[in-house]
Picture (cartoon, rainbow, N blue to C red):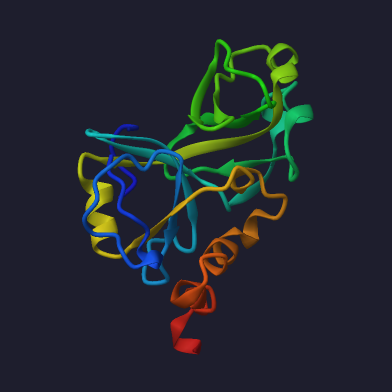
Length: 206
């Protein structure tokens, strides 16, 4: 898990009653960790998939803010941040690197340094001048590290029910209370999937 280089299958989300047959890209989808996934790197996480191709997948964890201020590390970008204005822990791979996820303003078709993921959401090259690209962005969030899977690895983990897969809402990567995202995504699915949000962190306490 979370190894290999960035980079394909869409398993319809398990909460909808399917999830073990369709094969398409999961780019732009959410991976929601099942309570049974006890890997401390991913326990109760929500991962936004940035790329998913035949040779693997890459995403960032949306709900693990740190206490480090982005402005202390990347001066000039802090004015574009959606609160909280801190660095997020994107995953255990490449923790010495930073990934910027941003939402472009309505009507912005794209620009140099912006790689679209879904709709108006994409990644932004942090070597660009924030004062210039900022005119085209509504908000940004910066992550150190990422979650990565090798070829077939993510598909296998989904088959093993480590993850539920859901379509992302445009607001999901920019929630002002990211710690609430895991139960929020589960509850909005309704039915039995919503009940998963009520699992205690330690099932022994249930």
